Length: 387
Ligand SMILES: Cc1cc2nc3c(=O)[nH]c(=O)nc-3n(C[C@H](O)[C@H](O)[C@H](O)COP(=O)(O)OP(=O)(O)OC[C@H]3O[C@@H](n4cnc5c(N)ncnc54)[C@H](O)[C@@H]3O)c2cc1C
Image 1 (cartoon, rainbow, N blue to C red):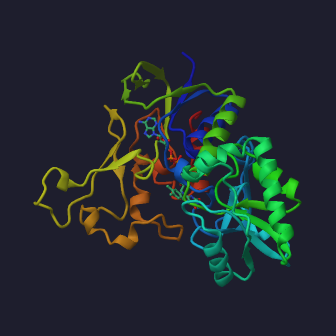
Image 2 (cartoon, rainbow, N blue to C red):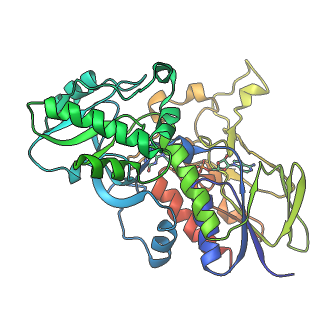
Image 3 (cartoon, rainbow, N blue to C red):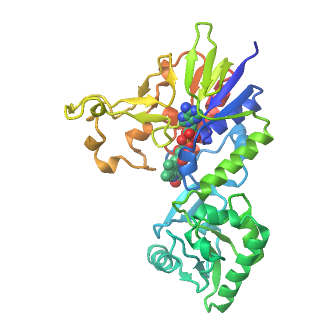
């Protein structure tokens, strides 16, 4: 039987693993479960640590270029918290402050459940070195019922050319009435679920237009669209639905069980995510023994699938702590992009102890605290799958 690779998990690590293995000539397919951390993240691309922006290798560049709508370049972005932050790359729909002309104010436009242009313009003016104005043309909702829509639903409306032209006209009228010179336009996460919408609006307005770094799922939907198009272009077969079991036979083959199907492959890349993506579940011991909480027992994790193989999960930095989330100081459990991310984000399968035939990538290996770290981990394991 020829070598076959099955990648499990459709986040950025799984996508990168499948695309890399395919480029290297493997017979590869991918299992896409539910949404994970990549779907929840806001479209900001960071390396594992600030300053670790070593250039992508040729193969990483080639895999990255399959995903349309993303750029890797140092940039400054505006966040829903009314502050700015630097990043190593972005969903191209996010407004890059670095790309705006020096003079002129940024027009902040729109009102949704989480985006209030008046409040944000004030906040950005106070927290950044640029000036911001809220323009009196908050009409991004065209129909009354759209006021109750979430950002992602509204964003799908702006995939339509006619609707985008309407937005350009409304924004243009607001900018004409303004006495301030405008250098760019900042909007909520409504600029389409497909790539290119912000670029088309910018061309219509003859001004850079883009989104805030928000908390909505719109960038997540854009990722799913971009991933599915890239998998189709690379001719990588897709199976939808969770993997229920991974079983190893003494012959070295791996049996992967879905609800309605069993696949028999020679290599599996587990890219099922960490505790944020639900690939690893945190099972503190008090679930079994409520009330009798030991002060310093090991925290326990379990994978999102059953398996007959020893797949040890390690969580460096947690073993010596109390086994309850309540024992973990709140400030250490966060999506930290600093040099010391929460140990919970570093929990993953122990690569040193894996049986032959199985590889792990991204957050499932404790290498997914950031988008680009998970991407690189996926590329590396996709290429190892052929060794
Ligand atoms: C709210 C939030 C904000 C973030 N902000 C940033 C940021 O600003 N900058 C940055 O660089 N990074 C950020 N990140 C981190 C970044 O999103 C992650 O590092 C990265 O997406 C991890 O990718 P992954 O592919 O390893 O895991 P995931 O994206 O979690 O993918 C794992 C996939 O496997 C699937 N899966 C799990 N179990 C199974 C199974 N049994 N069968 C089949 N499929 C399964 C899951 O459903 C999921 O789709 C953020 C993350 C979150 C959640």
